[in-house]
Amino acid sequence: MAMKEIAIITGASSGLGSDFATFIDKTEHLDEIWLVARREDRLLELSKKLKTKAVILALDLTQIGSIGKIQEKLKNENPNLRFLINNAGYGLVGRFDELDKEKQLRMIDLNTRALTELTLVSLPFIQKDGKIIQVASSAGYAPLGNFAVYAATKSYVLHFSLAISGELKQKGIYVLAVCPGPVKTEFFEIAGGKPPKLAANSQDVVRLALKDSKKRKTVSVYGFAIKAFVVLTCFLPKRLIVWLSYKVKA
Ligand SMILES: NC(=O)c1ccc[n+]([C@@H]2O[C@H](COP(=O)([O-])OP(=O)(O)OC[C@H]3O[C@@H](n4cnc5c(N)ncnc54)[C@H](OP(=O)(O)O)[C@@H]3O)[C@@H](O)[C@H]2O)c1
Image 1 (spheres, rainbow, N blue to C red):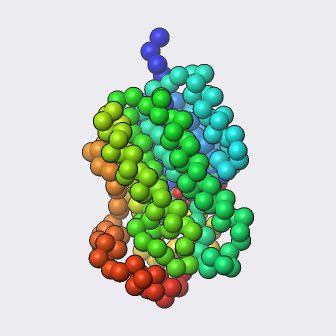
Image 2: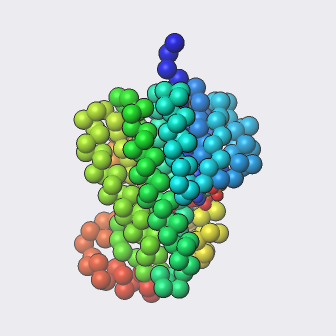
């Protein structure tokens, strides 16, 4: 019997993750899409809109053992994992010394540890031409005041993804780091602050990310302003970027 072909998308209950599921459903011929997030009702709602069979995995990825459950399922079913989309994540706007300690530590856990663990346990199931899409952020390009822990976690995601893309391309597996600027999703409800008026549409960011992944690019940056920001971070002294970031009120 042929191996079933699947995608795993974390953080599929809203925003970018939900749009990744919708686009992949439309453009790829897969047997299943595994949808991961905590809000089961949202995943169910999404699954009804997909023509591909959805498998709902209502998991809190910050809980020890949650990724072990995904690994068990992978081992039992031995699918060909064509797309791994590590998208679950959140940010917190505010001063490091004023934000809640537990929320900040959970953010590090979700944005970096869970992403790393899921990437590692998924690798045995990803074959030649498989794609890994890691949702980082343009915030990963610089140290940012009032976003210190979040920006540092996304810097990890960006640099981790770039590093492993070097070794995995030898196996024909392509890793893309997606680095959007502000996007209109529920992100800011959790992070605090307001999305800037010029925040991007989630569908546009996802469309470009999937296109860039197909082209085997290693980084996907949506929009001229964010591309310019990325270029500037290469030239401006880090101290100046930090100073400027404290001047921008979220
Ligand atoms: N929106 C932006 O401006 C922006 C910009 C750059 C990068 N990003 C990144 O894009 C990714 C997606 O964010 P978004 O903008 O689409 O925000 P969102 O709508 O808030 O989506 C976040 C997703 O992560 C899931 N999630 C949160 N905590 C989780 C946990 N403990 N376990 C499992 N899943 C969890 C949420 O599902 P449940 O609550 O149901 O668990 C939700 O599906 C994040 O990594 C974010 O950092 C966002």
